[in-house]
Image 1 (cartoon, rainbow, N blue to C red):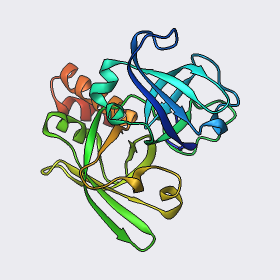
Image 2 (tube, rainbow, N blue to C red):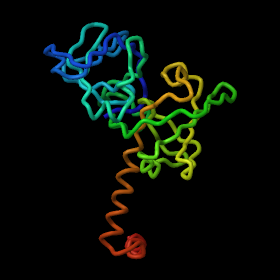
Image 3 (cartoon, helix red, strand yellow):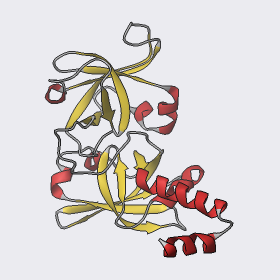
Length: 225
């Protein structure tokens, strides 16, 4: 579990599509450097979010760590587009001693969305994103003033257009200086994880309606409580 508060921006130093080393496990691996600030308490098997994707550390030293990337993660995320030199948002799994300043983030990316507009306003920046048609179901979980996670960054949704499958966020100056989003351009892909509480709420509502033969029965039960 994560908070969506990016701790550090690291740099990809290696991408291997078939890593036959013991820590590679004959799969796709990514090694991230410039990461000393988050590795002081690292252990093999720890979860680290890379661009909002929960991955397992299989090897590390004082400045770098290696993670394995499963085929499903490559399909769902933008990690397959990373190259040596790419910058990535990093966050360790939350612990009991940390203030919970973002929102509950699983690190389970739903899809990637495309940046379609970038517009400065004062010292803030508006970003507008397009959800691809094949993933438009996630629009059900995106509401104005709701939480959303973009490349691992906890943000507040500003505008939503369900007909166009688009939504917008505004990023303040402090956030711009500490995450990778401002380095991206129109057309770039961004990992998105919808608010998990919205997912549970909709699932529960759908189940309740089905079990009670309609919305009217659900409303009557809620009124009685």
